[in-house]
Length: 413
Image 1 (cartoon, rainbow, N blue to C red):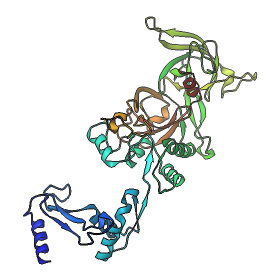
Image 2 (cartoon, rainbow, N blue to C red; image 1 turned 180 degrees about the vertical axis):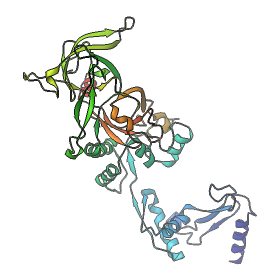
Image 3 (spheres, one colour; image 1 turned 90 degrees about the vertical axis):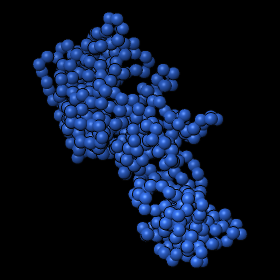
Image 4 (cartoon, helix red, strand yellow; image 1 turned 30 degrees about the vertical axis):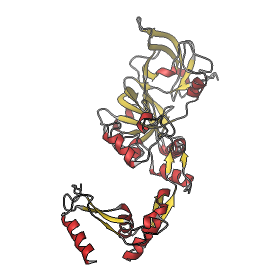
């Protein structure tokens, strides 16, 4: 005993090189559980620690420190993943022999999300190799990343309640988490209008110097959310995808000779198209409007099939919008070919930056972290790092379901 104490003190004082000595617990070298065969408690490591500097040159092994850390913090139930099940007898042995607070270890299956890596070691690789912008990158499955993307605490808690805990490893589709995010934001997020890929629309028969304010509902799910005023003028922006020169079947948006409803506004009809002479790209759509249809209803009872959103060009706020998608292309990022690692499955289209978006004027005062539903687009959050009053930046939290996009996909477009 005296010899062991002397050796341990000399280990502590830095006399021995790395790997030359260890301190072990005397338990049972014949134990059926390998973890109980006189496990190592301390090893020598001459390295600078990020908190204690060079004060220590011996460090405890994880199994030795685990139960003590839990006891110090008065953890009643230490929840671990299944690979720690074989370590529980040693966890209990240390707590019993040290006579400290009796934390209890319970093992459950690890939560695995599709298209996602939850290994801290692998996430650190992504950060260290600049494959993401940091631990709070909105594509990262970290709390800081999810917060920056706009996920709500309630959505995460509801998701965890729904999937429960299990004793068998499995993978949960990330669409289930997105469902709970949509469900919460649908009830709480104010509705606003934003045009991500603008196309200029000029209403020929609308007075050039006229501006009128239209009433818009803030949240149809919450009557107490009230309404807001949005400006309407002769020149508007609509989404490029809301106009087609040659509309395919089941396309009910704006097209030559076709009438659509502007959200909260009027019926407009396309009468002409202005194109780039060299490329043929549509630069501007010329329309007329029916002043009797304010609010979206025609006195003569005529119906239109499509309703599109818009912003007034003279009043719109310039914004940057970041469209985030899954960080990994495959549902299981660890499914790789021989010689590759998980990084081979990174999704090259996991973020698209739209620098020329136009949003309604009320969003000029949006605060970092505020969440909104961009009508017909999805749920968005004001970025907490890069956004500024001069140029707001919005991160897409989750998209809405797009009926036309589904039709196009089914038709192979």
